[in-house]
Image 1 (cartoon, rainbow, N blue to C red):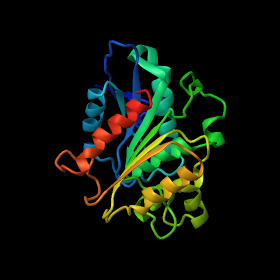
Image 2 (cartoon, rainbow, N blue to C red):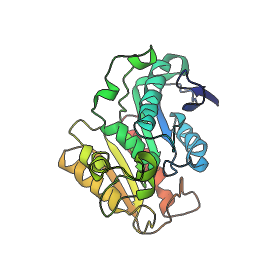
Image 3 (cartoon, helix red, strand yellow):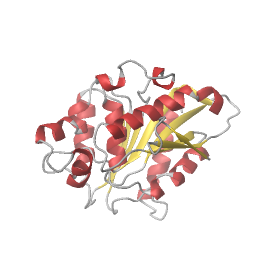
Image 4 (cartoon, helix red, strand yellow):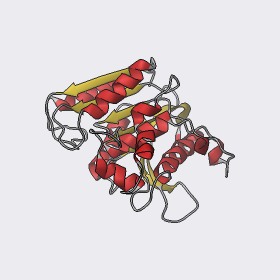
Length: 256
């Protein structure tokens, strides 16, 4: 487990690598984005998740992206750089560069979803170094109780304000709400939430699922009847903890 800087600038984003060896060839890889309302990074949504992915034969990279007072687009640029970094270093890490995905919780789910739906020039402008020559677009996304709405009645205002500033126009918040960004080119998505989540309403997942369906994007969605926000792997909950088995099956179905 080694932490690697993503940018030449000291103090910027890093990834911590959790490699895995597979006898059948290079491993798929997933960049893990912990939640924390773009205010902090939840530790239980980082390394423990990486070790679970390792148990599935998947290499994991826990991203420490920039949070408040840093604003958009810096976290998104960090996530894109992380996927590029994994692909650039794939051979040395025993990773298949054609199978690199993202997984995020809460605000980290929003960040993973931003990257999965990003079509803008910030990801395609000229490379700054050899890492930037790699493709930043993930092959799939796993979004766990994600913040998907930054505008409207179901918005998570804490994440929205930390990412954009309290005075950000509603039009900008809507532009960065995930349902409005889905296209037919969005990769397959696995979603889960709890119906009584009091911090991030389940409507965040349902609205995104509807948008994915409208564009014919492959998806799997699970809504569990009860559970607090921020459960992570949910190993102590016999009902919600089922999500890891469901997700493992989804990943296998995608050839991972």
